[in-house]
Image (tube, rainbow over all chains, first blue to last red; front, side):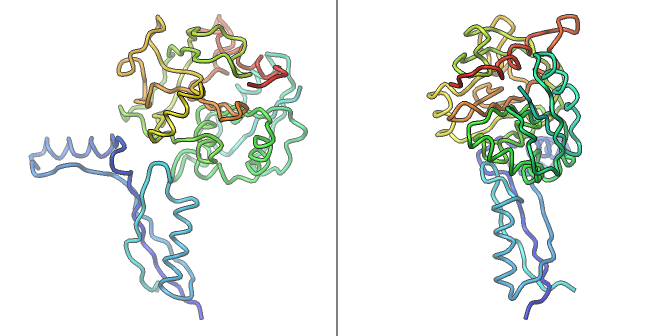
Length: 87
Length: 230
């Protein structure tokens, strides 16, 4: 039996690689008085509806998608943020 | 000599690439991204632009276009391939070249003429330049910051595969000031280990006529006629 799942994944610049967008955001926050902000990293949050046999299967499918297309293996890391049923 | 120029949805330098190919006496062949046939082309140019809107990452979706299966097979057989700007990004995404091209460190889109130094003449693409020659070539990109891990950079430098580097107009290095995008090692263009695949951010196809600013791009396209690759 397969059913629809909703999988969320975070894709972020790898730590140590210059992230000028994150730095610009951090600078803006500092300028607004949010002095407690350290480093900021700007990435992507994707939400995918996937038909799968189980939550593990849905997660595995999205992991494969990240490796092939959604994340750049040279510069980005990804993390499955959540797997739920899609309705 | 037939040179295929691929058009993806969002390519915008394909006409210029066709003009460059014709300017050196080769026969341009237009190839559509959905095609499965290189039409007997002896060399391929992946032109600049914003293929598929640069959605996800520049070149990430174009890399899986139907024509790219043929282009990758052609490159792996040793066929000459030039990727310019978005074409360079596509070649990196396709893993025909190592590394990646990230957002310019300035976060600005940079459109200007830069000084490039020819770092090796031992490639078919640069055989017609003098070693260390400084070229004036336009750039126009927002995602040109060449990035690779330390091992890849060492291999590129050690093998002489850094082909073009951003320098001062007098040819000396000043990576912080002369690099328009924050590229590691001021890298503007590289070749693969076999030497048949070139990727570069600057636009040699926009430097074909001294009356329009520079003719420094012509020898690169003339190099497509070279019978021996490095």
